[in-house]
Image (cartoon, rainbow, N blue to C red):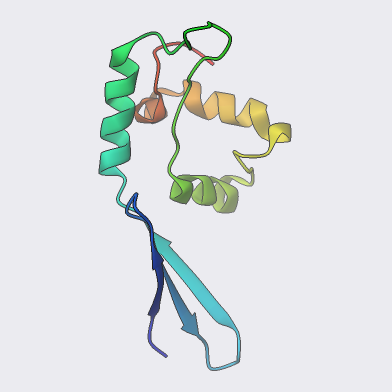
Length: 106
C-alpha cells in the first residue's frame, strides 16, 4: 500500500496514512523543526520569560514529534504532569537548550 496524506498544519507538521495488508494501519508524521527552534531562540533572547504580571514564566516549546519520541524511547509523556520531574531534567540538560524560550533552570 502507498502512503496517503492526512493533513498539513500551518506549523509545517504533516501526517500520512497507510493501510497494511493485514487490515491494520500506520500513521506517520513529520514536522519541520527549524522555524520552531529559531522562534525559541528569539524568545529566549527577548526577555526573562516572565509575563507582565510576573505570575507566569515561559520555559520551553517542544515539537510534538520530540514529545512522541521521548514517549517511545524514554518511556515518559512530557505532557503528563506526573512526569514533570523527567521533563525538568530534559529541559535543564544542555543537549536540549534549543527547546528553551527563556534563560533559567526549570
